[in-house]
Image (cartoon, rainbow, N blue to C red; front, top):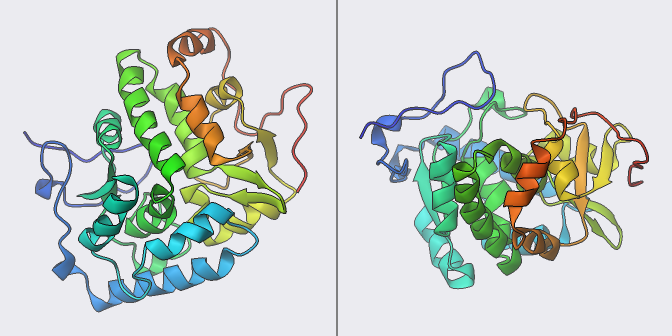
Length: 283
């Protein structure tokens, strides 16, 4: 079966990635020999820059787990990471050519298989890239897959995504993923820190998300989060804050079907909207 590129949001550029290499589940083999020295240098520069920005901004869980990723000098082999990751939490990385359909994404997560885009951004995209690349996926997402609680949440999210697809509620559940796994913040003893991959892999948004007075930071509540639209072309106007990673796993044990029914009766909330009585968590 032919697989086709996937587009989320709006972009003037067609999706990147060679989808002709992908199997029917959108996975493909990492063609490690194809990476150039320029691409390895891009990885090295991105890794060094982000690592320097982590102290005081990234969650303690992420900082603890990052060394398990390894390979700061060159793009890592998925197989090398998989040896450590399988032993730690039973997860495996699988290559994909780029964005994949939601149901295929959910299915891979439910099997404890994390899809990683196998190409890296160009030198003129160091500060901003339209769609996720191997640096975003590996540096931003994979370290916390070594954390047993986050690893279990990701599998539970995948299983929940398959149910949401059957219930016509993938957009509602996608917002939870966006505001937790991609752009989530956590409250720690010494302040608000980032654990979301979209923040942790961004040089600009990492500092903005935890120190800027511009965005609002709200305690994460399922209904509020899943009603809230989000931006794909700018820093977030709203972040949702958890107390610890266990809170995510506790949410995942809920039956979301009644929640979806309630949410369909309620209006959406704009990305920058603050509801009456809401107070932003100070930083």
